[in-house]
Length: 146
Image 1 (spheres, rainbow, N blue to C red):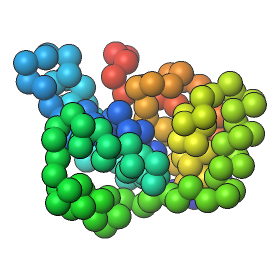
Image 2 (image 1 turned 180 degrees about the vertical axis):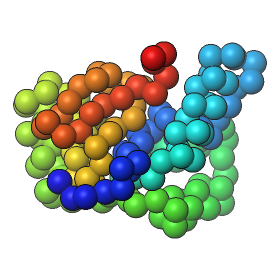
Image 3 (image 1 turned 135 degrees about the horizontal axis):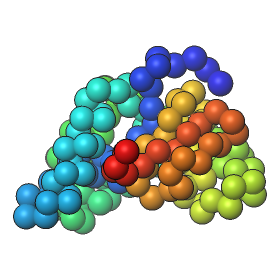
């Protein structure tokens, strides 16, 4: 895998959404928002085009973002973070990962993009915490108490 900084990590959609949407009336979501923001601030986050798409559609639906806000967000993602495109190689790797790890279609494309980006950690709330993929990529749920 390519060498990335020690704090390079791939960040899944749900972590970004907690960082962007804080529900102060819900203590658990406020806690998750704080953790997500800290994680993104203190690491070299990597995203994929799939993650950007999923974040945007959720912000349109859940937070009534305008198209101007979505355009600004897309620009910000590309300016601030490495963005892994879903190439033929990534999609073929995703197919192999689905067979080996019994991942869903969408999770496998996230994992394949994370592997292809060279990140050693994939932060996600929705995948199996602690799973090592291909002996290199560890999936971590940042909201699990240590």
